Length: 344
Ligand SMILES: Nc1ncnc2c1ncn2[C@@H]1O[C@H](COP(=O)(O)OP(=O)(O)OP(=O)(O)O)[C@@H](O)[C@H]1O
Ligand SMILES: [Mg+2]
Image (cartoon, rainbow, N blue to C red; front, side):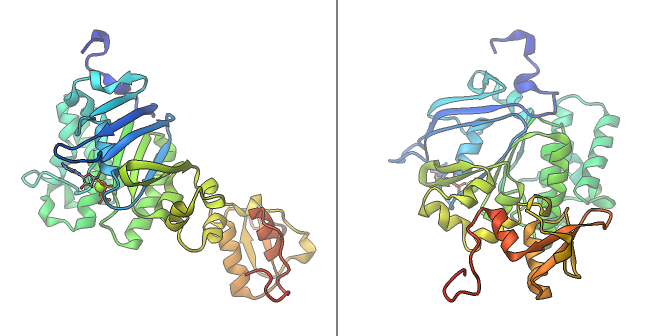
């Protein structure tokens, strides 16, 4: 390592808030393969950003991610974290400062759950007390308190093991997290809960995170920006969820969004951002400003009335919402829904 003053602290280690990541023309050709698995991939991630990689199986998501912590060495190109070239750092040291949730969970079978979570803190020389406190705190975070710490991975369900994988990656509070389909093995209800918990956590810790998923809805819900990838990790579009939903770059991106793009956009807009109508128009049913416009639409449809009331967090009436006003919030022409063949 060339920089002796920071030997034990590469990549802004110890500073738990996020740092920037930059990949430039990063290419990976696996030995014996005629085409690269990742071809000239470039991306700049701002400190504290949560970036989602979405793309089909085999497009190069895992390969791209593993080059950042050098589990896979790039064939060419440069990668820097916090402005420092990761290829110049000691790979083992580098990995201790990057949380990594691998796609196949990969817990150590001969270690208890508690020991699994403590792996990196131990390598970093944390005291027993500090490590034990951290393990307990994390098990609570991923809702596995009780006797889980003493159990072995084989005594947990797939989804529970996956949560341990997330806890293990968070253990030493690394500034960068690479998460490869971390919630893939969980049922929809657990997944929803983990996503909510993860968002809450990210709000308070603000790490720089790259998160791989097959699930576009998960990408919309969690991501600050989404990279839609095709073969060889080619970036088809890289933008905020709202921008991608409003203006997909091409048919490929459109196919990833799937059905109901307008409804997905509505879910990203808080009721408070819509142009509210007069209170006199308000119906008997009310939606809160804290809800989103998809919730509002849901209420309108279920209620069958042309308008609903909008109330603040204390239940005080603020105005009203109609279908037209919800459409206006999306920036679409307000269509005449009574006209045959009009809005659909
Ligand atoms: N060690 C290897 N040797 C040769 N080819 C490999 C190796 N690892 C991966 N590949 C190939 O590289 C391409 C990208 O693989 P990668 O694991 O990055 O895909 P992915 O986008 O993560 O897919 P998935 O969504 O299925 O996890 C695939 O075609 C894969 O077969
Ligand atoms: Mg993968």
